[in-house]
Length: 205
Image 1 (tube, rainbow, N blue to C red):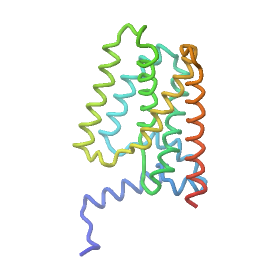
Image 2: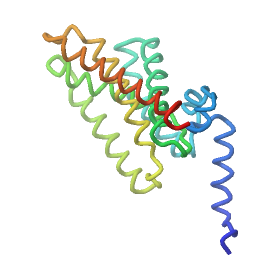
Image 3: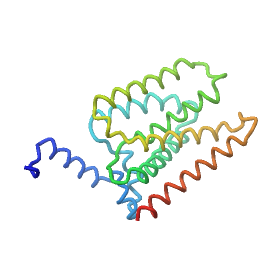
């Protein structure tokens, strides 16, 4: 009886196999040299709802950021955040399959969050920025409790968020009267990146 699988189980297995073939984030495969799996998961999604949510999230945040920073800077941050989040996720959650642009999207959210902290006194449409953050936080909570949110890659999200906050803090470094904070932020981020790379390629071998 233990070898009997339901139709739903079979579909899940097929989807997982397909995602792995297309380049999903799998720590064991990345350790074996498949570095492309740090980038391709940004373009892969588990289902229609997953795709819709990420596209809506990115459009909502992205248009405003492109006006403020330009398309090129936002695009660079988008992919850097995605890769950083996937590296962190692979080193911590080693045996699971991860896909989605959420790591990149959280980088965009990191920019918005750092703007709130650094530029609050000069932001003209504060209520709009706060509404965006609260809105997507609420949607994320609803997703967690209704659409099998236990499969959410929290570590990858955290990596993307930290990457976005770090990048935007560097953009506004001149706002700090004491640059020691910025230097500490940079050093801690580099140490975190060094740790997860060592953890991924050496400690797990």
